[in-house]
Each structure stands twice: as structure tokens, then as C-alpha cells.
Amino acid sequence: MELLFELTKEGRKGYRLPELDVPRVNLTEVIPEGYIRRELNLPELSELEVVRHFTKLSQLNYAIDTTMVPLGSCTMKYNPRINEELANMPEFLSVHPLTPEELVQGTLRVAYELKELLKELGGFADVSLQPAAGAQGEFLGLLLILAYHRDRGNDKKRKILIPDSAHGTNPASAAICGFDVVTVKSDENGELDWEDFMKKLGEDTAALMITNPNTLGIFERKVKRMAEELHKRDALLYMDGANFNALVGVARPGDWGVDVMHFNLHKTFSTPHGGGGPGSGPVGVSERLKPYLPVPQVEFDGKKYYLNWNIPKSVGKLLAFYGHFGMWLRALAYILSYGREIDKVAKYAVLNARYLRSLLKGVFNDPYSHVPCMHEFVLSATNLLKYNTNAMGVAKRLLDYGFYAPTVYFPLVVREALMIEPTETEDPDTLREFAEALKSIVKEAKENPDRLNKAPFRTPVRRIKEAEANRKPVLRYRGK
Ligand SMILES: *Cc1c(COP(=O)(O)O)cnc(C)c1O
Image 1 (cartoon, rainbow, N blue to C red):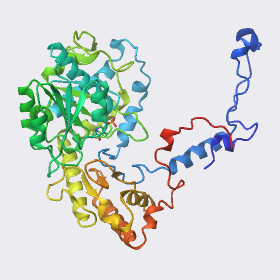
Image 2: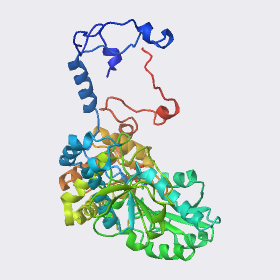
Image 3: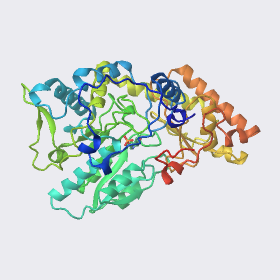
Image 4: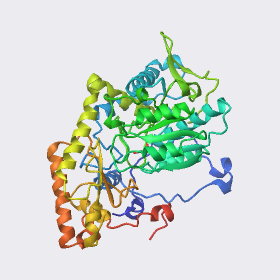
């Protein structure tokens, strides 16, 4: 498709300004010559042309509104429209972050109520809503762990233990906070290897960072024992809560002894995501870490809602203002609309994953077939290597079938990984269609692997160089 800069036609306009009713001034009288930009080179188009351009662009997208997006670990569920309506209410949209508290009691109440509900759902002593994404929640969680050990004058706590199946943001966050990362193996059931964990756990361990269910979609059954062993050595337990969709309303990580966990509102609580945000990654903490939470915390004194800046041991502030309020509002509406039935989210998410996995039995290798999955599962396309194609081929060819691809080549502990998370919002017919598409792709792999290796054929852009936009970013249009 052409860019707006290529569609431009000289003199075409999408606006008409009212007649000038103030005296005309000579620009150079008010702005020094060197600062005046005389040529803007903006595209010149009519309003209709602009509308058509962006509408066409939006139609090229794969989106949850048009197709299933089975991206493992991302929880791409339907975003209920009612939440969008609420988030677009002018009463909330037009609030300035510096408005005095007494004029924004309703807005503060939204934040307070969401905080209280997340505390309840996670089993935590308190929650900070500030982090702008899961990864920033991890960063905050590790800052809290650092503050905890420093406050106790313990400078031996240098190491963070992280399983080899972890999301890349886990070791990255630990490294940014100055910790040394120690990798712990997974065992043959896909859980944390207990022996390896006990071997690596020591007086210098600051915390263990697990994900539960982990990125293989497998529940870490020994989570309570992990917390006990850590606490005996004054180490803490971080839980990556990206997979909370498998637990919400059913189990509470705080009850297992988890000291800190981030929620991904844009995963579990249906706020829209993809294309880089905005996200929201509130952090829940146990009593141990509560004194260090960032300022301000939203509180209620029985009469009014207010921002509490008086947290003496606080790690400080994470963002210029308070966090992504629009996401909070959507998440609150989502939680309230389920009410006490929110456990159905988790139960149907797990049921859907188990059903889809059963439909795909024998289609790919399933390295953990002896272990039940939770809300997602990881298959291995190694059975296609003998036909000279692979997981990437499957992912690209799926686009031609009208489905978004699963997460591929992650987690790193599974070769040729296809990580599939259907979420609870897909119906059984869609799951069957998706399974049929995969079966037919595997058939193609045997008969004509090039169909996979050269796919996609039906997308506006064919095979792209995956890392090029990152390695050689082109950020400026320079004409053809
Ligand atoms: C998505 C995800 C993260 C990071 O969360 P963002 O909100 O994308 O920053 C961390 N860990 C796991 C397991 C995830 O799936």
C-alpha cells in the first residue's frame, strides 16, 4: 500500500480555516529567522482520502476482532465493548492528573476499588497500580526485593534464581536491578527441578522468580514448599503473574507464600493489547514488602479517597504521574461484570486449552503429554524437520488460513516450540477450525514443504526479515 506521502496531491486540503480576524504579522518579527520552518512537506489530501487510507490499513491487520489470536503467554482474549465505552466517558477522559483530589473523588474511587479487588483476587497485603506493563511490574518487584534486603542491612543477597523456561523479561529485569541471574533447570515434568533449585538456593539468594502456571502451561505443584525454603533463608518469592488467567477466582498466589507478583491487566483482565501497548502491570505484595511500595498509594479514610505520599521507606515513583488509568477502568469494569463468577474465566480458559490439545493429539510432538496443561500448552514441530520445514513454516502458513500464529520458538526449553493459548473467549467451533487448519498444514508439509517455507501468500507483505526493523530502523520517509 502507498504511504500518505505518496498519495499526496499538491493543493488538496482536508480543512478550511476561518477568515483571519486578527492583524497579520510578519513571522520574522516574532521568531528569529533560523527557527522558522518554511517547508513542512506534509502530505496534502482530502479528509475522505485520509479516512480511506487508515481504514484500509486497519483491514490489513490480524486482530482479535477478526480472528483467533492463539499467541501463547499473551492471553489474547476478547475485549468487551462495554469497557471501551466506560473508558471513553468524558468524565474520566478529560481529568487532568494535577486536578485537586476533592474534585476527582470518582476517579480515585475507581483506582481504590481496583486495588482492593486485585488484593482480594491475588491474596496480597497491598497492591501498587503504577507499573505501565508487566515488565515494569517485574522491575518494581525486584526494586522492592532490593529495598527489603538493604533495609535489613543484608548485602549478601546478590542472586536471583530463575527457571530456564522463564520469559526473557525475568532475567532482564533482574539484571537491570543489578542482581546476578542464576538459571535453574526444568525437570521431566516441565516443573522447576527441585534438586537443582535446592543446590542453587543459598544465603546469597535474594529471591526466586517463578511463573505459575509456568510458560509450558504446567502448574508448579511445589510452589508452597519453594516459598518455605526461601523464607527459611530470608529470601523472597517473586511470581510472574502473566499467566494469572489460569488462576483468577480459583487460587490466590498470596496464599501460597508468594511475596510479590505482577498482574498484566492487558492479559487477564481483557484490556486491549498488541502493537506495543498501552499495558498495565499492577504489583501485589505480601506484608514483608508493603513498606517499600512506590508513592503515591491511593487510600480511603472512610470519607474520602486520597493519594498517600507518606510512605517513609518507599522506593519512590515509577512514572511521571500515576499509571494507565484507562486500563484500570477497563479492568475494574471487567472484574465487576463477572462478579463472583470470575472463576469461570480461569475454568473455561483451562478447558479450552485442554480441548484444543486433545484435538491436536498426534499432529505435532507433545514433549509433556504425560502432564495435564493449564490455560496453554507447548507443542514441538520437530516431526516436520524431516520434511525440511519447521515451526516457522507452520506459523507463516497459518496466516494464509486466516488465523494468527501461535507464539513460536518460546519457551526455549522446547525445540521448534509452538505455544498455543486459545483463551476462554473462543468457542469450540473456532477451536475445531483452528485444529483442522493445523492438520491440513502438516499434510502440506509432507507433500509440498515449500507451501510452508515460502508462506504467507495472501498477506500484503510476504516473508519479512524478522529483525531488520530493529537492527536497521528506518524512521523517516525520504521519498522514492
Ligand atoms: C507478557 C509476559 C511478560 C511481560 O509482560 P508485558 O506486559 O508484555 O511487559 C512477562 N512474563 C510473561 C510470562 C509474559 O507472558
